[in-house]
Image 1 (tube, rainbow, N blue to C red):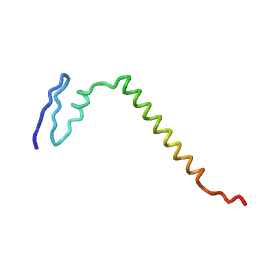
Image 2 (spheres, one colour):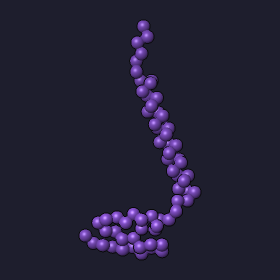
Image 3 (tube, rainbow, N blue to C red):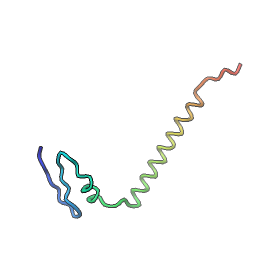
Image 4 (tube, one colour):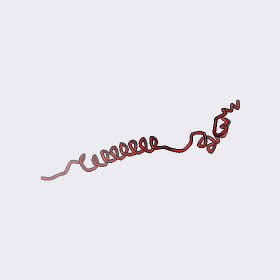
Length: 66
């Protein structure tokens, strides 16, 4: 397996058989306002899909009313 090193300004991240997660996180940096906005939009979409599938449980059944 080849070992390639990418030199970044904050940290040196090496691609090897094991992944250096701490080095990758340091190279990526802190989460900013953009990342929080994207997370909130994805979370709202996932929440709405969850509600849609939950309503199917109550609306799909045939009720014997006579």
